[in-house]
Length: 160
Image: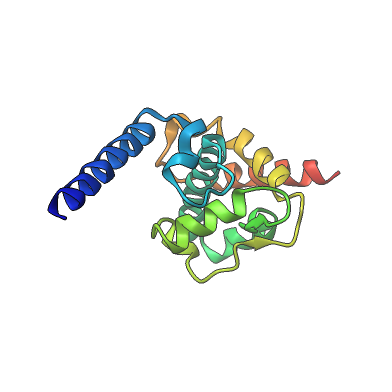
């Protein structure tokens, strides 16, 4: 009886070691051997895109906080508000929800609506990211009023 239990433990240990190796080496085609239920894999590009968008919004939001009320009135800040992600058009919504709710990342969005009701939200974010790319080398520095206006103009031009 003890031999049977020992054999089962040894086999379980062997299986778990193989599963660990599959994960460590990134053999995604073998993931079904590791997990009983496997959802569609979220590409690293989705995670990277969300990270870039959130980094950009972090800097935009910090910059807006530093503006005076008079300066805020000069800008159409509603144009560049974070809208969330479209649940129907990709994995961004699900990944963002997981990052906020389960991984405790991007805490400023906890409890906020992460589901966009605008299917073109990614077009907006990509236009904004193209502006952000010009500033990325200065990351951490707040945006000036004129910089924020460039984000707004990029979004408005995308809508035309």
